[in-house]
Each structure stands twice: as C-alpha cells, then as structure tokens.
Image (cartoon, rainbow, N blue to C red):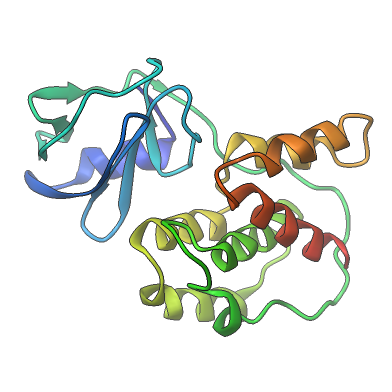
Length: 210
C-alpha cells in the first residue's frame, strides 16, 4: 500500500483494538479510526487524502478490521504501507482579494450520500485558499464546530481540506490553472465521484472569483 504521510502516522499511532467498518465495497473500505474516517481504496477508486491506496483494481470483501501493533488488519490481511504519497495542493501564486466567504451553516451537511454536495463545495473553497496561502481562521473554526452535522467521511475530508490535502484531480486542476491544460483538468475533476468533483470545482471557482 501507499499512503499520505499523515494517514500513515495516524494508523501507526493508533491503539490496538477492533474498529467499526463504515462502508464496504469492491473499490473502497472505510473504517472509523477513533472519529476519523480511514479509507482503503483500490487503484480505480477516487484517491481521497484520508486513505491507504492499493495497487490492485479491486479489494477483497471485508467483514472486520482491527489495529494491531500500529498496522491495520482487514480480516486477517495486514495492510502494510510501503510508500508515501503527497496530497498537498500545489502553490497558487495569485492574490485572493477580500470576498464574501461561503456560509458553512447553509452548506455543511447539505446533500445526499457519503459526501454531501455542500461539503464538497466547502472543500474546494478551502483548498484554494490553502493553495494561495490565505488563512481563513473564522471560517475554519465555524466549519470545525459544525462537523458533527455531516457524515464521518465528509467531516474527515473537510479536515483534510482545512490542511490543504486534496484528491489528485484537484491538485492537477490547480497546477493547470491559466495553462492550455486547464479545460482538460476541469473535466477530469468534474468526473470525480457522482457529484463530488462538480462540488469541488464549484467551490474552487467561487474562491477564484475573488
């Protein structure tokens, strides 16, 4: 497996014991790691910044999980991290002017599924500000306060966005801004998940409008 450095460190520091399985599918397994949604994703799944990443195209069926000696076990399979991968959003060398921020009360938890659309919009907006090096302390505090309103996975991804940790398609979009590759990067981002990519793109454009 490969993993973002913070994910690998969280698993390594976790106490031994069983953990609740949140979601099981052929491409992704999500586990409640002490209030943080830890993913294990296949090569064809969205490579979310809170997940361990397998090189295989599909995952075996999983019934139970536990942490033992700082290693995640899915049933009897040890999930060993052999490589670290970066998830930080690229540096965006533009100045963002003062602009009305989104209201987390109106967006957070708004929508269906594991990652409600309103949360994806917030993630995109926050990640652009992290890319530009622009702090948003008041909004960050409000988002953290409201995290219990949404799903554990979405709350975890918002925590990642607050730290500038993003999916590869978002990183590629930011890197392509203002270049001939921008339109293709937008299309690739929009295709992520059912509506997650579209939400991320909407939030990014909202931030860039400033």
